[in-house]
Amino acid sequence: MNYVAQTEIAAVLQGHLAHDRTGAACYRTNPELAWNEPTPVGCPAHAAFLEGVPAKTAHQPTAVPAFLVELVGGSLLKQGRSIFCIDQHRQELFCHRFFDPLFAFPPAVWQQQVHQLKVGRTVNLPGRCLLLDSRYGSEFYHFNATVLGRMARFLAFDRRLADIDYFLLPEATSFVTAWADLMRIPLEKRVHLGEHMLVTAQKLLVPSAPEEFDLGTIGWINNTLLRSADKPEKRLFISRSLSPNGRQILNEAELVERVLRPRGFEVVQLERLPLQQQAETLAASRVIVAAHGAGLTNLMFCSPGACVLELFSPRWIEFCFARLASLVGMRSFYHVSQDLPDRNLAFDPQTFAEVVDATLAHAG
Image (cartoon, rainbow, N blue to C red; front, side):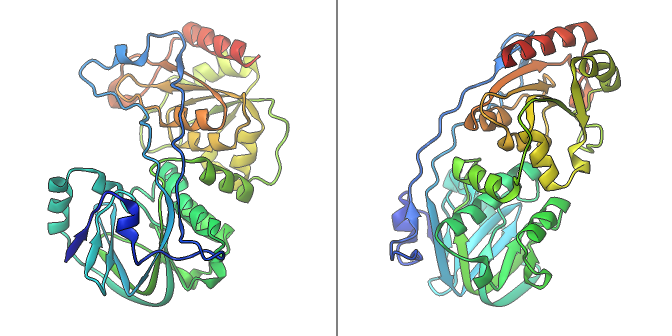
């Protein structure tokens, strides 16, 4: 099988691009989006906490062009969270970062992965199939940024979901199912991609997936989900007490009762709320305090000028949500916990109160 791995996207897609209603090829460039790192509150800058730990700051994503590829007899194989797209007629494997981030690595890395591809379940689908899965697509943050990013780009080319026969989706998590229901995708048209699953479609439609959130995706999600919102005045604390993935605030109950509730903060567990209520809750908030976690994906619904205070373990400092906050015009701050096992967090109540007060002072 030939590798199609040219550095120029036009060369990669030559002969495959669909056309929009104006007849123009479905290939549009997007400007890179600058972002601002958050401000430390009550602690040194993040580098001081990372002795021997590689910094995981939010990178400036490569500007991924918006495009839509139509492959007659196209196939895809999911393995190791990556999506491998194949033109069966030309026997070409699209090895380009605009199809999957794996291909941003040097060829020696991704070619080893390609040589280890295994096929498990095989599915042949008639009609038009739309690829919406992506790397890490079953995780809430990446689902919103890249899976819904694919959806937004598909619709931006004046395409209709009603014309699609099958939707190729990540595994059926609660939020994947909720979004499929919201978009009124019939159950019989949903195909959830699993490991080593090979799908061959009569016609495979592949929209590009952003590497991270972009304004087009944020705008589409807001327009789709956010019906109404109160004036942004709430003070909100997002609890991770239901999360199975660690990064728990071990003395959360104490901080809530001694610091947050007396300052007018409402405590929410976003996992308990429907998608639309999550959006409306964040849109109505002026100040958000939360430990680093997937719930902060909902910052995309906040208003410009709102503030977020993100709480980190010194073993896990990553500014992806600070970048998202910056894109929507928020002010972003952070504070770092004492070092505890399993990336859990704990804070001295007096110090925590001072940090929260400093954040409130910025919010006005």
